[in-house]
Length: 383
Image (cartoon, rainbow, N blue to C red; front, side, top):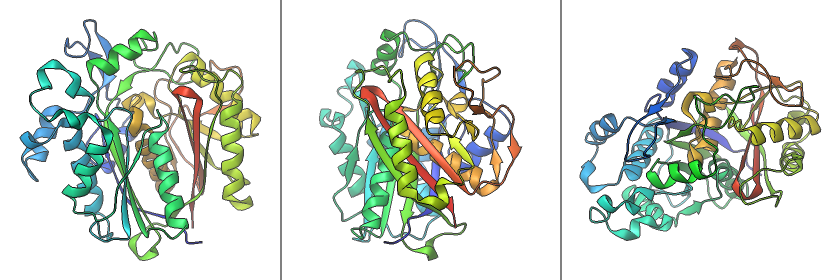
């Protein structure tokens, strides 16, 4: 079974339009979460992380006409283009596949003012996938992964398995979400938005901060297409069937995912997990559930962080951009602090990273959870 290497990546978020720009801002302890007072999203102000629309339009003009594409499509094309620029993978090769992960896609087309700008069928996720496939002249039928907030992570797992089973040599996993009135009002109805920038695992946490963005990871079985060799060594998903929106109170579903991910990775990775990148939304129930699952798996002493305090909860992009940030932690042997965290507010004594420090990282466990009780986990390892 071939190894699955990370060939290249890209992050587009409120902190920048490249992975390097995002990581540099994280190093500077900069957050992209701000108070948004815009009636196009909500009649009341709320904290969120938005991609710079003016820069998006300007950067996209360098490669194509922005008027032909939706905001979601512009982010996707820019993200994929930047990742490909740093990879030797041939997008036009029949052995290369696209996987697109998102929860809502072109959700802003529902807005009355946008209905006449674009064909209404763009609201369908398959249409977005088809557009990207045709734009980059990829010959393979694309795959759409839409499973709440684990979509990005699940896309990486599925892509890895397709390579391991020799169905494809390369898989480009790309995904993201944008904010709209529909999205914001939905989370407001759950009373799940924080009154300040989110504070993962903190005693004073009171909810999440929404974010938007896009991420792309290029997976390959060809070691000649990579510089620093980091591979996917295991991945798993589960569903705790607890509630349509609330996570399991026991953390058992995520615990099962962690256990199966460790089992798939094998003893070498399992016995040497150096770092956990958590979902860490900043909601009371999610963070508590994660602390229980991590402890049940016997990983309570492993350093754990959340990137949500830097760019908010980016929904379908979260698993991707947070995996990319975790992979960069491995490359630079640096643990980044959990922005917004001061004092633990979860019942289990997990090791939340409260300051950035240099530590050798050979194996990283990335976990995620989402509405409907879904959970996913993946392990990245250095060769």
